[in-house]
Image (cartoon, rainbow, N blue to C red; front, side, top):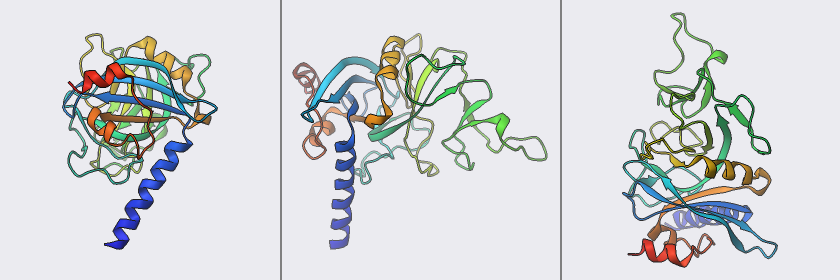
Length: 253
């Protein structure tokens, strides 16, 4: 029992150290676990190490089934709502960010993250049995079997016929690619209908471009995505920024 307690303390202190290292936070807060939409805020630390809100709130769409605890930097989430493959829930927790992607062959001027050109041959693999599970892979760069088949049975082509992936950011959810814990989680554009997603977080194009230009890998940005009550519960132990009063009142109704 003592060993378990020490392990949990270690994991909690490690997460706090990572949040303390961050100079930029994307905070997404939903009304509750089943909400299919939320509010996004941007925070940056000032020279006094205080969190200062730099943008938001922006309206964002979440998974059409709401939120569930995802596999991110929070190593020991409560065993109440665990995200699994295909559950249509956006991941809750604390996450690092990966590469950017988009339909343009060259990245938007001024962005600082690596960029992938989203062609018809670029896939995000959601096949839990594939060695490429939860990875962005160009099919032209992998070896097919003797029958000409790709080394996965299911994937998402990153060049859609819709606007959704015109610009996007990889969320490092399930970075260990543990089969079944969920894959292919992004920040991306809203559909034209502003419908909920199948597990990502979507926003309007002008907001996405603002976000992509704001993010700086040298400032170790993190995404924190939670229902409002869980955000408040972790406010002190994770040293999170306070949300604007009007949003707090709205979510507590």
